[in-house]
Length: 257
Ligand SMILES: C[S@@+](CC[C@H](N)C(=O)[O-])C[C@H]1O[C@@H](n2cnc3c(N)ncnc32)[C@H](O)[C@@H]1O
Ligand SMILES: O=C(O)C(=O)C[C@]1(C(=O)O)C=C[C@@H](O)C=C1
Picture 1 (cartoon, rainbow, N blue to C red):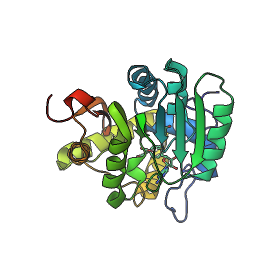
Picture 2 (cartoon, rainbow, N blue to C red):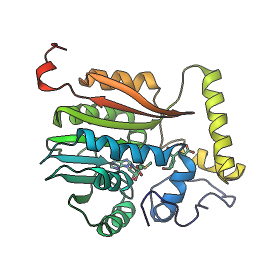
Picture 3 (cartoon, protein in one colour):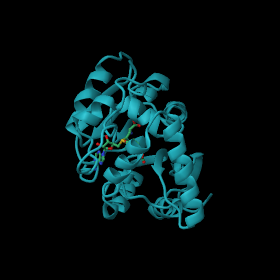
């Protein structure tokens, strides 16, 4: 079974709860995560597949790739499946023990040239090494907002010239009409994927304190401030979006664009 394909059905919020606790990436969530994420993020399969395809273009031979907030390793496995470059190592990081343990099992099940090193660490304190590609697929939204700038800055500094960051996020909007419409369409998407109104509202309450969203403008500003020369949205559905951010190649790094 692939880390991005439905497994056990997600029923974490199916029964009425007396008190809805903060959402956590614990064993209950990790056990149903492939089903949860594929029914909760519009375009998830496309995003994962495209991360693999981008890897074939941007991952350099004898370089590292980081998958930050890897969960069960779906992005790492897509990169491993697509990328042909030699001497590549993927470093898959997550701070949930439950995710890391299961990710290791998924990764072990796949042979191939590219090795995947799975580690349980907070990405805020992770000491990164030079790399040619970094994936932050729906991870930064769970990191305390005050830590986000320095994480993006650290990624930029460790990326080799010409390197790629793929960052996907759920976003909010300043325009209330647009924000409410996109949230409403998103809830309709969830209902169409079999979630009840109770599941949708209990999960929304659980996420309120732990998933603090930025606007697209805030994300783009943060990436630009860090030094990325190209920031391009390549996927959007409702309030879910993904950008690619490129560090300029060496020859164009000093304003010679
Ligand atoms: C929505 S999931 C990411 C999905 C995954 N990237 C994928 O493509 O399937 C967010 C993940 O980020 C992890 N996470 C949240 N904050 C983190 C942090 N500070 N350091 C490392 N991992 C973190 C969570 O444990 C969770 O597994
Ligand atoms: O906003 C929601 O209701 C979600 O379910 C979103 C979201 C996410 O964006 O990461 C939240 C938790 C799970 O990781 C899967 C999806």
